[in-house]
Length: 149
Image 1 (spheres, rainbow, N blue to C red):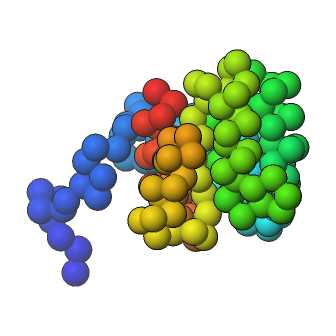
Image 2 (cartoon, rainbow, N blue to C red):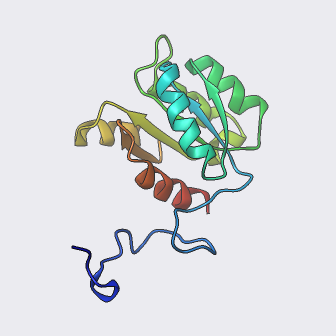
């Protein structure tokens, strides 16, 4: 049975709101980069983010992600898998931070490495936040809204 409106609890009272306060945050015109070697997972996440108004760019390797950040200063955030082949997410994040405009680009670890120790390691490596897979899209949107606004 549904609860009366006056007794419903807002599931995310601190979530940023847009003019249509009943829906998720919208990000019209903002660009994010997803760096993940899992094409299907990256596609699914990209589709969910595109539906919220984000422009999504994808890279399958750390070097490709680095090149994207280096050559496109309009990228506002990087969603970075940790377990990348070759240049892993930690090394990729460190290299992004070395770029002039990369220092201000929020980097969010999006990974199956989901323990508190994994989160601490990601933050210590210079990432701004850690979101475990499978991705809770509403949570990721709240994190993005906080970091981008």
